[in-house]
Length: 95
Image (cartoon, rainbow, N blue to C red):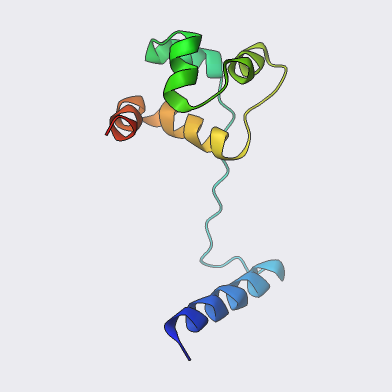
């Protein structure tokens, strides 16, 4: 068997075990809710600067800050990273 096949096969076996309730050895990441307005202010950016810096539309950012909508998926992950270490995220994005 090829290395790729072995890896896929192992992943499939783990997924089947997980679906049966055997979660031994698994770690699930659940991003926490972020107060986007508070985070943006803590970083010291205007709405426009924040939106441009992180690839978020200004309209979306405003919806998040008003509470009309909430970040999900990759956006929520990015915001969680920003809340932990904004300088590191900015450093990585500026390289």
